[in-house]
Image (cartoon, rainbow, N blue to C red; front, side, top):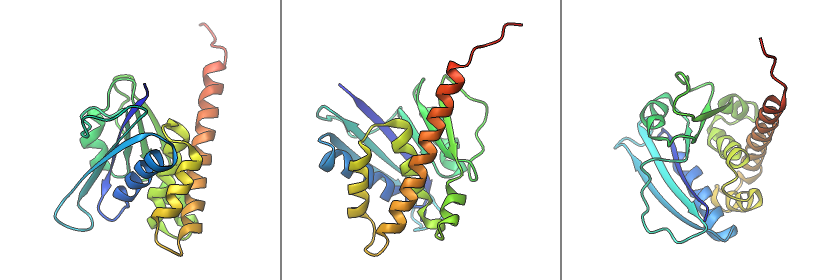
Length: 194
C-alpha cells in the first residue's frame, strides 16, 4: 500500500486550494488512485492563512484529515511556521525560497527549495507560483504520475491560461528533477576522512 498525506499551505490568493485540487484530481481521475481533499482558510479572501490537505492512496481512504503530513508545500512563512512541526519524521518540506526562510533542519525532514516566485515572474504572472510549486512537488515526491498531473492541470485552470500554467508546471518539474539529481550526486560522492 502506498499513501501520501500532503499539506499545502500559504496565503489566500496564492492558489493553494487550486494546487491541492489539481493534485487530487490527477490522482483520482487520471492516475487510478484514491484521493481526498479538505481545505481551510480565513474569513478574508486574500492575504489570510489558507491550507488544503490531500491524501493520495492506492487503497480506499477511510479518514480524510491529515495530522502528520508526509509532505508540506509551504508558500508563506506563516504556513511553514505553523505546519512544519507537524510533518512526520523523514517527511519532505517544499518551500518557495523567496518567501520562506526555514529554521534549522529538524527530525530527519528533508527540505527542498525553489525560487517559485521568481520563476513565475519570469513567466510574466506571479500568480502561477502555485503551479511552479505543484510541478516541483510532482518531481520531488512522485506521489502522482506526471502525465496525470498535466491532464488535471489543463482541466482545472481558467480557459485561456492553460499554456502559461503548463509552462509554470514544467519549470517547477524540471527544477525538482535537477534537485534530485544533485542530491543523488552528493550522496554518491566519496567522503574524505579527516
